[in-house]
Length: 158
Image (tube, rainbow, N blue to C red; front, side, top):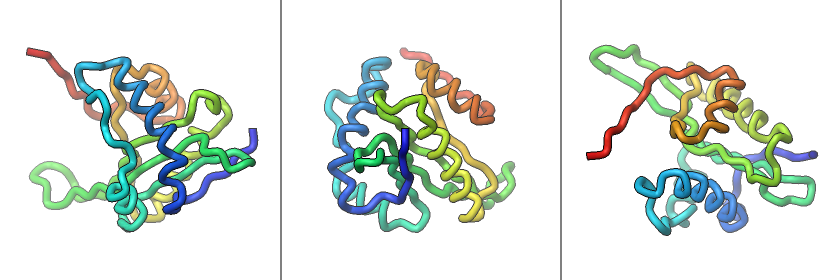
């Protein structure tokens, strides 16, 4: 499948909404006790912030006919003057999603590779992200990309 990657523009907000909803449903269906029933998706304010904040990135993957096939959001997370951690800048991938119909075509890998290049360009020394334990497919994908677990967050419902 042929696709291109580019930075998102204002005109992409509504075309990306179906992918954002698809991503949400993956999480909602797996853990309904954690996720709201009907959250806002890329609201205008949130979207404008992603486009205008120099520390944020929103990438869009689209097919040859311009159909959005996936996206990635990331931001620079700086650690400064922490009592035990070294000062550093990390490029935190907040969301990575490829629509069901477009998976296994190299889009996810291309988005992650571009995020790594962009993070390096911004002076970050590592790419980081969080993934829910129930999302085994995503976890396998990230491990195949060379990522390793750094911190495990555990939960006990009470």
